[in-house]
Structures are given as structure tokens and as C-alpha cells.
Length: 147
Image (spheres, rainbow, N blue to C red):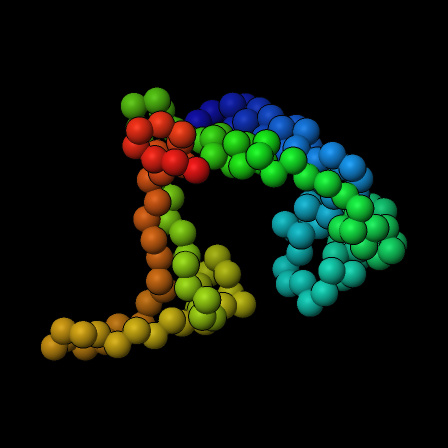
């Protein structure tokens, strides 16, 4: 995907996400940015300390959480699209970490740790991460999958 196309897809996704927000849309949008840019979040009020949360006050954050509204169906439709899919003839497949165990050696998420699962065969046990391969067609509303 060309850089311009990727940037356009990202901006389009953000615009579409904003349209899914109803009441307190600006505050919820900034809250989402803060959540996605934070390294670790020990409580919701710590999100107000993120640079992307420009409103600054924790009370505004809690007001957005209490009174804000999100169009769940529109958000589901948005997330079911393939905004970063490659060429049309390629079938994207997403790997999803489904473990609830920490995997601290994972480069993309250093705060997590290993998921140990004993081998049922005669071979040695190998520490690894539990993952699930999810084809993008699983999300589409057609004969091959459902949301």
C-alpha cells in the first residue's frame, strides 16, 4: 500500500470512527486517542495525563464515560471493514493474541509474559503465545462468515 493511500485510509478510518460517536463525541475521541497512545493505564483518570487528551481534567473524562454515547452498530460495521487490506486478490489474515496470561518477552507488548501450555505429545514443552488465525472473511456479512 502506498504511503499516501495508507495515510488516506487511516484518516478515513478516524473520520468514520468519529461519526460513530454520538454524545460527548470530542471527549470520547480524545479518550480513545489517549487510550491507544498510553503505555500502561492503571486507572481511567491517568488517561487525562496523556498528551493526546487535551481536555486535561479527569472530571471531563469521567463525564464522557458516563454521558457519552457510541453507535455500537456503526462501530461494528466500521471494524468489520478491511481498511488496511492489501491488493484485491490477496486474502488478509489477522493473528490475534487470545491468551490472558502475561508474555513479558513479547516485543510488541513487553508488559505481558509467557503462556505455558504443556505438550500432550511425547515431545518437549515449548513456551509460546496462544494465538488464533482469523481470516478477514469471518467478519463479513455474507455466506462465508458473520459478524
